[in-house]
Image (tube, rainbow, N blue to C red; front, side, top):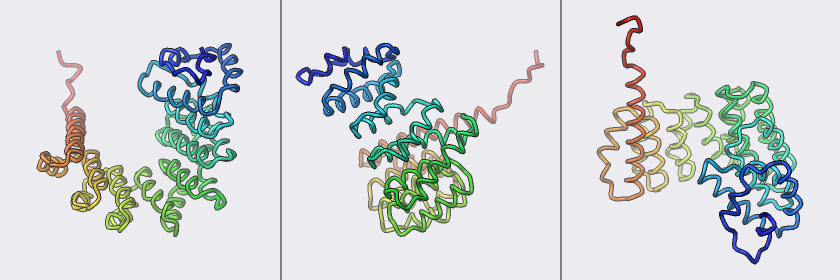
Length: 309
């Protein structure tokens, strides 16, 4: 099957690609041999298509292929392989990603590895993996952020990835990036404030809602939504009139995440917004609030006494 796909003169057929799902060990060995002979452009094409197929269908699993492609000579293939492992929560993946983050020669791959490690940082914070992995992931990402020789984009993504961890070292890193003279690090810091879920960041975020840079305003609004504090409404709702459409959309999403009567009333009042993108965002936000309300109602509903007959 893989031999047929190697032929650049033939169109890639989905049925051939789906046959690579859950590939067994003997087949993987054959795959490795043929894969080395395939033109880099074709390899990129195949790995992108496998990624798309896996995203569209939960039944397809190409992890064995993606894992093998982490060492591909082509940086785009390596980066796409990391993306393909987005649902893989096996701790065995952590050292592989850390190695790519630290040692891959291409900035693009380092960035993608950092972003992938963010998944494990979040898992560590909510205790869904062993504490030792929290230390391993946290230290690796902080070391990269603190390494002034690393490209700024890699440092920024490492900070964003580590931000769910609520350690003092992470908070110090966020503050350092926020006070940095590099705009990209500051943007990363504002994003990280939301993921860090600490209301101590609120004064910084409220200040950045008025920043002249639309990208920072966008990240500040999004971070406010992550913090989920209803007291933010008096500052967040005025941002709905921002001159930048992306900031306006971010406000609607944030209102949906925070919920509460004030958010609901505002969204209902603007449900007939003429701009289609905003109208869709408002509808989605109202649906989110409805789900939140239903969950809250279930939590506070009196439970039947199990001793009653």
